[in-house]
Image: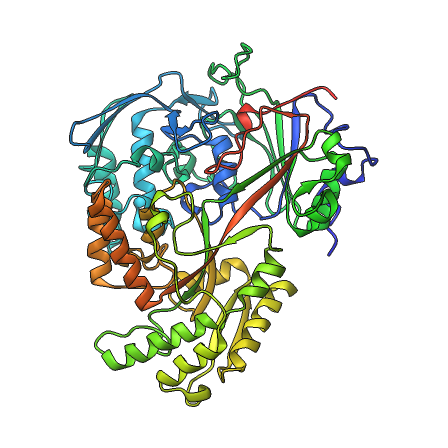
Length: 584
């Protein structure tokens, strides 16, 4: 498939050697992205790319420390904070020089700008939790902030007036977990101590924006975002191009690189959607975009002997970064499905369906997935649900169902009461995408299952449609990748927490014992007790098989030598306010 020239106007530029003529302006840079962003509204996040682009325009109370390169956070809108001895009360002092800037016409304010206040924080967080918006990010607050569940239930009232009144009252008085103490002071109360609370606040779901950008007629945060960040939208063609420009009169923030400069360095940042892998590799080779996420195509162009740069590119100064991603790709089974799920009160049937899920797991084409989709070098096999960077992964036992074994699968199928598949209905595999390589994976799975007598029906859907079916518990088998925002087992195991069904629990897995253990696990900060809770939860997942861990990706990036100040960070993709472009 060829990338349309309408997608990337600069593709018609004369071919140039790497690191030549990246842009017309000295401090302008272009990036190619493969996934189409959905917009700038934090309650509409569906992709990591959405959060990455939103973070250039909108801000949170805190952000990841770019230079530290780990889970360390630093103040962003918050100038300082303090926490009570019991870890339950946090007081944040907002910086007084933070302002919203509106680049659109007609502007929200005559001056196009106003001060950010604690009331804006309250509004943004309450909107995220408001049941009427059906945000996929409510999981980030659920069970964390005092009173947040009561507020969500109130806004979910079937009576529209009662729902609206619940938010009006909360905006006026706050809720127990979020209290405005002054224009620049906020009090946050937690249900239990959370050692990763500041990391949580660095997520895009806690971004802050003015209520006027949502409530004024004709305005939409999706397409016309108003934030306090270093960049603002200059041009936004959904599905094609996003051009950001430096925010005029942005607050003074000194560069951490000791050169006396103020941030941001760049005058303009461009993101262009490039779905075709060969096109992405070629425009990077010509020096037209600043970085490339390496896949099979990129490896064939730039590398040899596995992941070693070819001499000509190493001599040209290309920088390579190879890091384990904080993620997990898994195969999820619909636990509410009458054929493969877990039904209340049906003890014998549930035993049979557990055996069936194990058989389905043992027939997945892991070899093809690794060799074709991951090209061997771009992922590591998952031993458990916890990525290697999670400290607790060292004690997690290996999953016994995430490998191909058709003989064992056939035996389990017989024990489940379906000898050679006799009496078993067709099973649906809902695919994310209609591309041939996605369909090929489904065909390989279909072939494996046919060898043990199981008929698999493939249902290729657009990503958004697959996501909708998954959240509605309307899919028997799906694949998904979950990206962590910090390395903690609770963040991964929350995918199986009962209250998250319809939000992030795509398996619709409900197990009272698991939920009780999870609540205790989240309240316990460290030690043998926490480790044992983890092991108990993993044992339940091993027995019940709501999902199967497949692999953890490796992030292999190539970066042009003229992109200065670049650092790889495991929990955020773009730190554009720190980048600069050298003369070349």
